[in-house]
Amino acid sequence: MALIVIGLMGRIGSGKGTVARLLNEEYDFRAITIGDLAREEVKQRGLKPTRETTTRVTSELLSRDPAYYIKKAVKLIKNSGHKRWVIDGIRTPLNVTDFRKAFPDIKFIKVDVEPRKRFERMKSRGRPGFPETFSKFQKHERLEDERFNLDKTLSMADYVLDNNGTIEQLKKRARDLMNSILSD
Image (cartoon, rainbow, N blue to C red; front, side, top):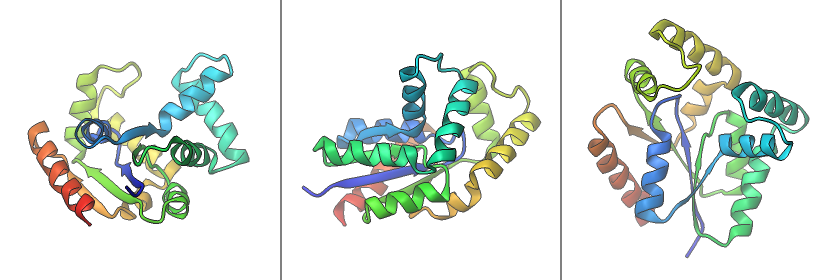
């Protein structure tokens, strides 16, 4: 069996984690989350994995090597022996180009949801530090877009997976898309 790698991209609250879980449960994809790699790095340094600490450590590492986490993920995938991987959290155009260099057949899927739905979904999770109003959410999102050049990243997707409906609709759309990808 050939190696199959899927890269998930999307804005905060778009459902990337839900899609990654579906790929794991139904298609035996192992998941790597770039954010988890960053939190792991913080823990290895004996620091508390807060958002601020993780951001600081990540900024330090990426200032020395912009592809630090990509290299870590590529090494993990190539050394694992497992043939199906999903990478959750593709954020920058560099992530896309570096993963394409490592895995020429990688497929990038943009999980797409309109902003108000993403805000409501994120708000319902009740995570500390989440913007409490839609306007603050939009401001946070604009800053994230600028920081990561997310518009350009999202434009590099091979497929778009609409997640504006129910979880059942998302699962059906994801299954249809995966059946198409896996049959190629």
